[in-house]
Amino acid sequence: MARIMVIDDDVELADDLAAMLKSAGHSVKTYNRVEGAIEQLTREKPDLLVLDVMFPEDAAGGLNLAIKIRQDQATQALPVILLTNVNQEFPLELSPKDIDPKWMPVQDFLEKPVDLQRLLKKVDALLARPSAPGRK
Image (cartoon, rainbow, N blue to C red):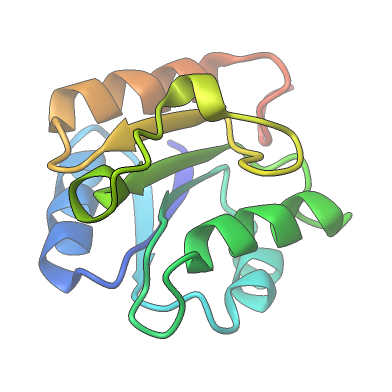
């Protein structure tokens, strides 16, 4: 059983993701803001993070948090799956090809609306990697 954290300002989506991940046997905690997230991640030590990009207080809050995660020694190895509807709101055409160690330092990327089965496959694949936190 992996410990997964979901950070998304859409409470209903976060709850749906948590329910699906719990039904797959994972322990899940949800948070609805990026403020204080580094402290939460350091304290909770999840095995994987599912993270939204846009938050009401900061349109790039998820990207900014991902950058902070990589800069903090306590969290830098944490696998992150980024979720976003940014392409629906702005014509940026973000995709997995934009994953970059400095600008978008995440392991995977999914657009909203989220295909839950696809997300679960990505979660399982990241957790199965030998370098994933919690793996021996």
